[in-house]
Length: 284
Image 1 (cartoon, rainbow, N blue to C red):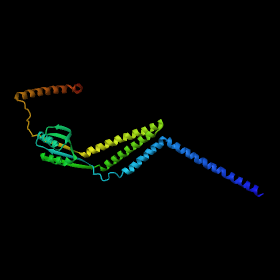
Image 2 (cartoon, helix red, strand yellow):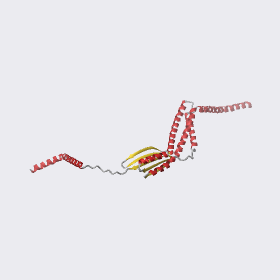
Image 3 (cartoon, rainbow, N blue to C red):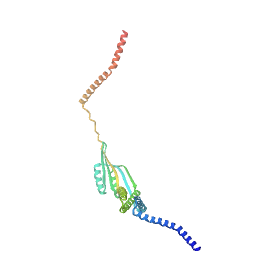
Image 4 (cartoon, helix red, strand yellow):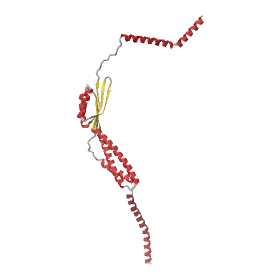
């Protein structure tokens, strides 16, 4: 009796353990099969997330780059001066520009009755700005106005430079993903993202170039003017004969105007005449 009972208990234990072990093995096998498929055929969303996460890592490390960078200052000045001779001043200005490697980017003139103005927009290397600005003043007969403005763009410069580095790092990541893409849909999605990143790179490079140009070359807005000497110009007067002719002409013109004015009153004259006739008839 003990042997059949032992066999029966063994069968029950084996039957209860069998299904559980089978199910566990199947789930693990499915996971192992799906994992390689996911790695071999990534979706475009996964590729974009991978690229963005790479950009995030690049930005984290870039934020600590170039913390000791020298300040970036944009310098602009305005100078309004009176000179003795504008022609001589322009000749001297040309020599100064050549001396300090500066140039005029815009120039205009204004000639009025009392003064002659000349306007110059001068770009000069930043390290020569003070020298040129100081050397312009001795030519002034009178300094009417002068001002200096300095704008610190160091933070803007670092921000643009960091963005540019991050965009270039992201571009490299997209290029790597493009090499691994194995279907047309993924390739098109990556190329679209790549074109957008390259457009952002061009924009940041243009902004960086503009900031560098403004920092490297300072600007002076110069207005130099010459006061013209006062010259008395008497009015031309007519001789005696011309004055008589003008008087006769004015008298004749006045007479004509008077007659025309009287003729214009004919309705009033007609009414007055009728009233006078009625009054005379009643008296008669």
